[in-house]
Image 1 (cartoon, rainbow, N blue to C red):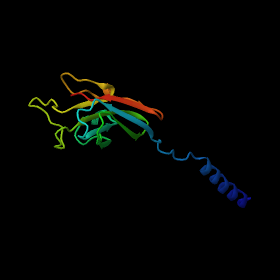
Image 2 (tube, helix red, strand yellow; image 1 turned 90 degrees about the vertical axis):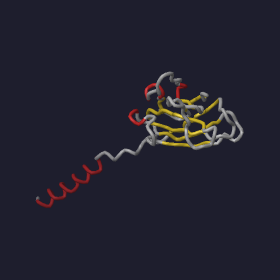
Image 3 (tube, rainbow, N blue to C red; image 1 turned 60 degrees about the vertical axis):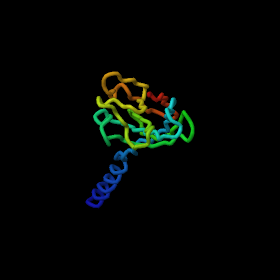
Image 4 (cartoon, rainbow, N blue to C red; image 1 turned 135 degrees about the horizontal axis):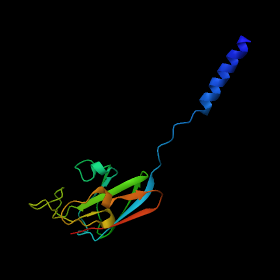
Length: 149
């Protein structure tokens, strides 16, 4: 009888382990295409900063992904990226004088072309994440952004 109880306990333990939920895989990324139009220069680099958290939006070095793209003679670029499902926002600028920074005037307003997802056009202050966000919830998402001079 004791051996039967031991075997039952071992088998029960095995069945419970097999029935325990497996750890879920991380969400797969989805292909998103960012199309940037109205580039001010056909040779100056375009910097794209991708954010997936409102508290990090537009804070120096706090982006989730940073890309640098050269237009190669075009006024429109198409940038494919893989993003995890969720809320994202993009801020971009074009470094027209090739000094590797976004130049600003004495009031802090950019003097080089810049843009945000959803084509948000701020007037008196930088936009917030909520204004610029888009949702990645499947493959094939296209984000169109026109650069602002």
